Image (cartoon, rainbow, N blue to C red):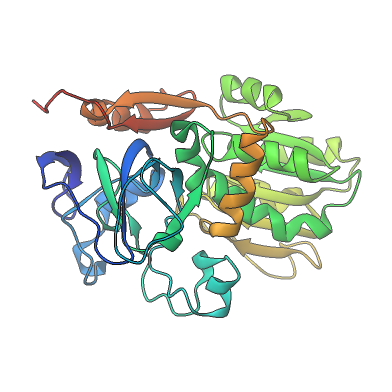
Length: 352
């Protein structure tokens, strides 16, 4: 089968013919309906070879995966061929510790390295993917697996960042989402669904701000040096009870901190490489700063159910597998509208 693979550190991915996988004991082969693109893929491509451990390239990219069960290995009883499933990407989790048993595999206490499909294991940018343990699968029923694919990372990343903050997001408070791209549009919707806060979206492009309004933002603010002041004005001078930074660069973090109210919470999910000063002078008293990465099976079950009930809008840009290079180029240069998803199944073309 044709797969889009990272063959060597700090080189561009390439198409390569690889054998189709088969399920061993406890394993499942999934026929891929959709495999999403993510900013993490660019970080993987650029990663210093010295930082790789035993799970270095080559491997097939793609960690946002959904499709249908194609083959089950011995001992697998929860799934059968044809079941529609989404893939929880926390493949480095032990499955036995408290966090794993609580459905928060992304916080596994014994995970030695960040491992996932498309990150150490062969991922979903191919017609089939081998899932090493059936516990990583979540049934999706009648939900279109192409739409379910981005929920497995972009969706659960923002959902898992928002859930712990909810007790502090009181009615009438202000919640801010900085960066309303593939992650931020989900965040706007989750805040709208789960809280009674005024939801404010911040972005550098007018088109994104327009989309944010359509997806539930009460107010929008252009990013820039005046953004924090505008957020404070919208909050009646109080500041934001919660800020989710989906970009994670120095300017957005500066806006986030300057927007916070006393006892506010800033959570960073954008891996832009930025940082901020954390001290008594620059951070509001009682404020919390946190990071959050991905999510677990409980979060994925939650948002799959929301989507199945029609409570989530899922915006995707669809590309055939053989257009992977174009999809990544469109992603890198800001030409996407939604979340880019490759459609490997049925793609007959071969790479040039």
